[in-house]
Image (cartoon, rainbow, N blue to C red; front, top):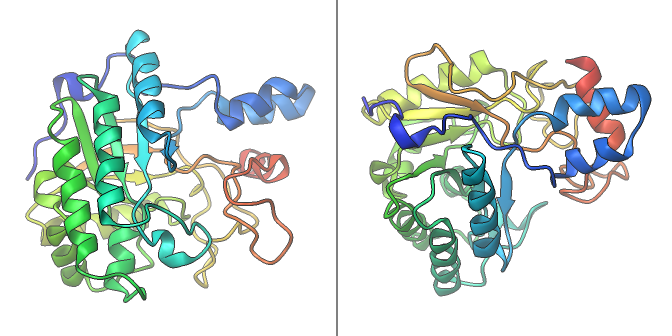
Length: 293
């Protein structure tokens, strides 16, 4: 079993809450009951997603701000080539060389400051389920990213492993994670941007952990307060709720933290019903999540 994080791995002040996040900006412009509801999101820490050419600069700025407050930044590195299998979150680096240079900038931006990094949501699970255009190079790129980030001893890396409703062959997922460098990572992440309950995610995580010799893991609880709507629905489903706020005090064996990796209220994209573009803060959806919690 990989040991639980200690020392510099968890800042004394907890996770960093940026005053410049989309939820914080929306709450600052609202009033009355709407402001009170949005504050339920704005007061909690959520991840900063690194997706573009400015990823290294953003990593530096966020980690510096967090360090000044004695807090821990949560970042998501999301730039793998053929990202999201070319679907809603298509994009990423143009090729392997561009990705390695991108990761180098992210790692350099963190320098010697502490941070937790969730690495490449969906990248491993898509490789397992046969996403077109994904080949063996992806595993090498992920392993490279883990290695570069882990050259910084205060950085913890959680390689994304999908969610409880996706890859059902735990052994196949474990083999893929091993090819992607999980051995050098601190653990894996589950339920990123999804809705499976903490109980479902934890049970799934324990099985994956066992297949990996006891690797630890984290769970995204940002929108899982009412669990999954079923039927594989993941794109802005209605009737969902905020989940448990971020904490490292999980009380569960092998579980390092409950995190808000997805920013509650940010759209999953246009799901064919006229929703805002991916990543755009959607006040009515945010209010629904907060009101149902």
